[in-house]
Length: 324
Image (cartoon, rainbow, N blue to C red):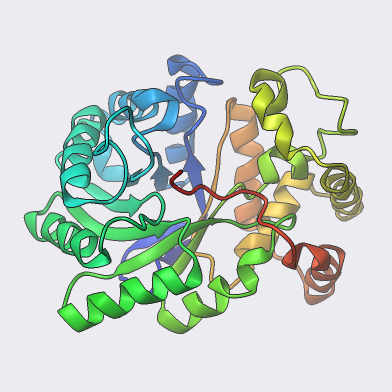
């Protein structure tokens, strides 16, 4: 495993991070704990969760699994998406964020989080309010670094400008759907982040499993796959994406890699990427993904992958999450 700075901060994170939105759902508590422990043993230090994952079960399971090992990881969580009924149970107001941070700390069994992220842009709350609340959290010691998620390039740039003007802690990272099957961030967000020193943390780096090569056709859903267990996920299974996943899989076989490893390694070769978060429901999946951190792709392979996926720099993002 190798480690990178998170944006232009001094914090270093593992090139491969662990995504945990399946914990307490597709992966039960026992399996989730095994995955966490194996991740740490494999050199993964970055663990990402959110207050809404599996109705808060993800945070609770992580807190229990990290008992006595909290100091070994960089722990990240998020708030801002809908948590329940009521006008103040969503968004990035001071009211909502303070309440949600306290809940996350209790579930995670810790007195601080290393990276606290705003899950999506809130058009109804002034950015000054959000950023001052986050700055207070950092100054209190309950949060060490702050990040964004699902922000458009202009939203991120505006937030950074306010932080600079007001002397507040600034976002060091942002999460976005980014993969060979979704290169839309390269149009505006990637150049903005490179210019402003913000690290990108891709989510859906395997396009929800499409880049594993497991989906042979839109109407052929493998048993136990995400689309099988979560039928609503089938909305992501488009014919062009599934066919593209098969082409990446064929290329990976020719190079001696799994499709997942090749896809993750491509992301790790992007200068703007700080860490790539990928989920797992089995230890075996995790161990396969870990191999990506040691892969070095030559210029010819990178150029071939860029050409193969070029059309996915345009059109709509594979996924994005915004407040309704």
